[in-house]
Amino acid sequence: MTTATNLQKVPFAKRYLTFTGFVLFALVLVLALSAVMRPSILVDTLVTGGMWALMAGGLALVFGVMNVPNFAHGEFFMIGSLVAFTVFSPIQDTVLSDPANTGVLKMFGPFPGMILAALVGFVCGVLLEVVLFRPLRKRSRDQWVMNTFLLTAGVSVVLVNGDRLVFGNDYRGISRYWDVHPIVILGQPVSVDRAMVFVIAMAVIAVFALFLQKTRIGRAMRAVSQDETGAQMAGIALNRIFVLTMGLSCGLAALAGGALLFMYPNFPDVGVQPLYLAWYVVILAGLGNVQGAIIGAFIVALLQTLAVTFVGLGWVDVLPTAFIIVILLFKPSGLFGSEVKGVWEQ
Amino acid sequence: MLQLTGVEAGYDLLQVLWGVDLHVEEGEFVALLGPNGAGKTTTLRTIAGFVPPLKGSITFRGQPVNGVQPHKVSTLGIGYVSENLNLFPAMSIYENLLVGAYTIRDKARIKATIDLVFELFPRLLERRDQLAGTLSGGERKMLAIGRGLMPSPSLLLVDEPSLGLAPMATLTAFEALKALNKRGVTILLVEQNVNTTLHLVDRAYVLEQGKIVLEGTGAELLGNTHVQEAYLGI
Image (cartoon, rainbow over all chains, first blue to last red; front, side, top):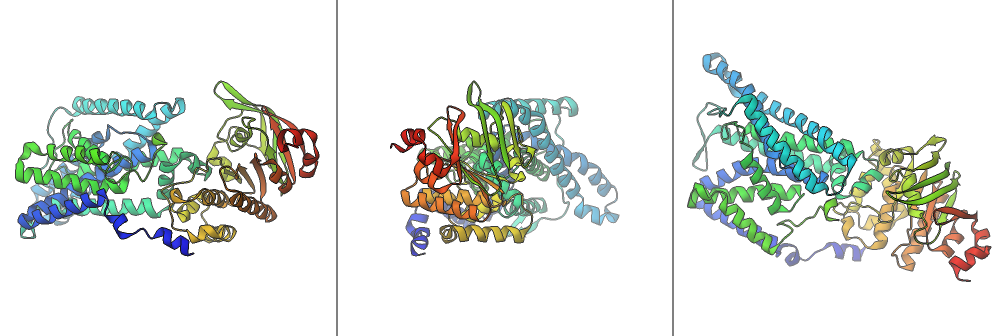
């Protein structure tokens, strides 16, 4: 017993005085300092971070479980915002036409669009797996990562231009979901939309994390990401897990698109920026690491907010990318290493 | 219980098995011996569904298992402990066992089987929450066997438990297998450690160049001149 317990006790210094620990400490310090100077930085970081976490968490999950670098992830964001817009516009019109008698609709009106966006995203993800990845997997698993990269890049082009063809090259946006006065947090007015986005993101991420950690199916997903053969030996049907993984990941991206409709109006290319941001996060955190991606999302959000607040809007992508380059110089496997190793690394 | 008739199998252009006939009866402890590259691992992989057979038939309790997908083979009651173990490195011992019980829905039964595994390998209980990737070679073998036991298989296929283990750890693994067999689990064991194995098992086959060349009880094979010359160095 003694040896077992001694082995588990890693000294404090070794566990926390790592490169990652140092970087995280520095970032928390920066966040705390800037929050004291300008509370808006804290609020902005949390709101945008929550949404990037939804995007990046799904991207990391798909890469971890299926070894698919999904470059069509942004298009599910686009699909989500399209669905949310289509559902929410008539609801908004009803509310505007008769503001006095539609109190309930005013309060809960935004939710059907977001929920439907997530569902449509889920279905599209399932289709992507069944129609494209499954036949490819049957034919050959050689060069899988490269082939799926090309496949998803192609899907992205098709979806962007399909959207342009069917719905036109227009901006379809709303000014706000909840037409009420901003609430005040830390002496800072925050629109209800942004506060709700944060609450939704946190709730979904918490459920998602619990699902992965504690449920039978979530455990099976992690098992597949760590060893496909071992998972099959345990009686796990890979195809079912792949379908569910792709569906969940795309559902989360579509939910993000739906919830952020007031900031990102729907147009064919709307998914491009969220896609690159999600990739920044995933590369920063370590490929395929879902928990790392959630923390990484807040780091990227903080850097973006700092860039916007102190340097200028044009620098919004420069600061995160520069930071990622520096991190990768010191830790090539990403900030949170690669606790989960996919088949592609073995 | 398990019957292989004229099984031929291989990978792409390389055929490894050239007509393997073997059978394992209920409650038996059978070993499959042979030199490197004879096709021992391929035989187990073919039974477990990871290699589709080109010819021949595999039946388990009268049901055909040819070309059945690996995850379905496991639900039929065939457990497989592979050579490289295929553990989930970033999961704790306990979680590895839980995943092993994926096909079991009855929580009480899962708990009872986990208790049984911990009773068989007390070492695993000591390290219940340690990540599988940080375990020693012997502990990893124990965990792989334990995970294989989680769905309570009636037949356990074990591939070279002695591979890369110190003599003491090998002995522990063999003793555990013997104890399991006494509890009623049928075992088909692949081994290179011929002497120890023949003393342990009821019956054994010798596989050479993809064909069964010898068959007999442990004692018979220990007395066989071919086995003595080729494998025991007598």
